[in-house]
Length: 282
Image (tube, rainbow, N blue to C red):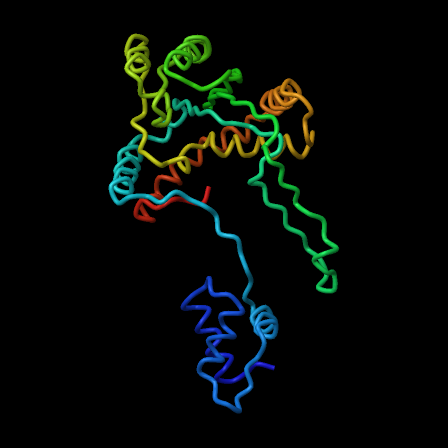
């Protein structure tokens, strides 16, 4: 049983270096121990820490933000928070996403009794490829969802411009009021011909800060769509099947979810300022 000064020492080691392994804790204690001192095994240290409320967590990967981009995010937040609440009713949020039938990045966690041996647990099988993959483009606002678009091949300036002509312009005509279009800083989005297209059709573009997917509510919508597809349909066997699954999920997105995501943006901007431009947990 670990207690007293040794217990405090172990907790301090974890607090100073949260990534330290149980074996390294054992080795550090052994280095400072006397000849007759008892050194607990790493398994005992693990049990002690678990019983003391410590647990292992998987860190979420996020891109490293430069100070320049943090400041741009703060300035963006301050600028757009000056708009009245009804401004956000006129913003169209857009983005592309790739849906994979077998994403290797998916993590699976099991809750099992401690008596179950690891060798008896199922594997999270990782294939050499990520199966079938399809790129989609879509946009939404509090006025509604656009038609979902399947993107064949890479998205370049020419086919992105054609996509906007075929799908954004009809959406703007249907809404029939002056909207603000949000797109990120992908190269095809900033191409000269694309920017000229926006100018020719008098479409206002939001000046989006770099490295800011956490501010775009359609990122959350894509995530929800992928989760719903996997839960409802499982593994598709063909590309067309995957496309049909995503279209079915997209066509059944309810207005409450769409509005909730769009209305969350001002709160995100406030958080950006409070967090000095750092990434948000969205």
